[in-house]
Length: 467
Ligand SMILES: Cc1cc2nc3c(=O)[nH]c(=O)nc-3n(C[C@H](O)[C@H](O)[C@H](O)COP(=O)(O)OP(=O)(O)OC[C@H]3O[C@@H](n4cnc5c(N)ncnc54)[C@H](O)[C@@H]3O)c2cc1C
Image (tube, rainbow, N blue to C red):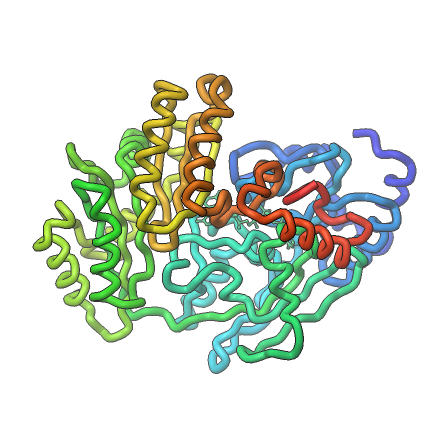
């Protein structure tokens, strides 16, 4: 890569201030693989500051030199948030800022650096008898800063909310290189505008998250899980309602998988140790219930499932009899690598619509795709409890030929039902051109003004979310 002399002296100045360890040269960067799709990192410098002050120094100098920086977390984002727009951007990685500073058992908070990996946080909390509200399949790579920047949702959003609901305080470096201290540790704080909310879900376009104060929750005594078969997709919503009435907020996951998804995962080489597929199943559910009362055997859960069976809403239900069995249910649901290899190159859609409209929506998309792209491989699944459907399709030749019709089928149905073209993955570069279909023109103008306030020199992930 040819780095101009201005950019070369910027790099030298950063190395002089932060030390040799700060720089990964473009050739070494290109050896790295982004976990989201298994693709190589672009050949561009990666800067790895070790403190908020170093981040601020880099941002200030980059702004002066007109050098755009892309904040880099775990590389699991699914909307091209890390893609190069001009080909000249550099990355700023939080990988040397991974500390857990303090777990406060009384206040139920944890203070962390933004480069901390989600799974490391979950493991540390488990030892203390706590859990973190957000969990997702990419837990082994996704970082707290990246999860905040994308306002990630995941598997337990139905009970604990998305990242926004976990964050009490933030430290952020803005595009001017100012370290904004928004590190409130209290749950009640009405002192003026809640500025941290603007950075949550801003995909690295307004500031670089360097630290956070997060809520933590007492760990449940037991979690009960069931893999359920339905004969009719119209029964998903009444099943969800009935379980909600019986078990209240203790339902912590309500995932739905259509047969195409199950067939692909079953056919993969991974051995999940059990076969859930039923010949005339219309769809499958994976439901978790968290128990805080000491109901070790899951009597309430079994009773609620019994009622689903009695009312003939569900055809069959397998209850996990051990933690290992529970994990095997979840590893089946989360086997995105198997999905990605069956649909390679996989194209992912992440939309949301009101739960009662999800079944008819999926049926409509299936039919439209069948007409627009006969033979196209597609899998449907999602976090039904929080209105979220994922559609993953084979991005090969059939997709390329019918791309516009496929997008019209998937997004058209969402827009007609007043849903969102991005439920939890964000906008990034991939959905930039269709942002207006889920956000009013006036709102987009305000978003641009906010960008101007925090990043007037357009140094942070410029070209993402909007032009
Ligand atoms: C297998 C798999 C399962 C997934 N499941 C879910 C799911 O259930 N729910 C869900 O919501 N998402 C899911 N995702 C996608 C999800 O968006 C990402 O996993 C995660 O939120 C991004 O974190 P990251 O650290 O990998 O960020 P990256 O991918 O590195 O970056 C994502 C965006 O955030 C910005 N960014 C990163 N770090 C910072 C920072 N410190 N400050 C400012 N900006 C920053 C980047 O510039 C980029 O725009 C999944 C992804 C995979 C691969």
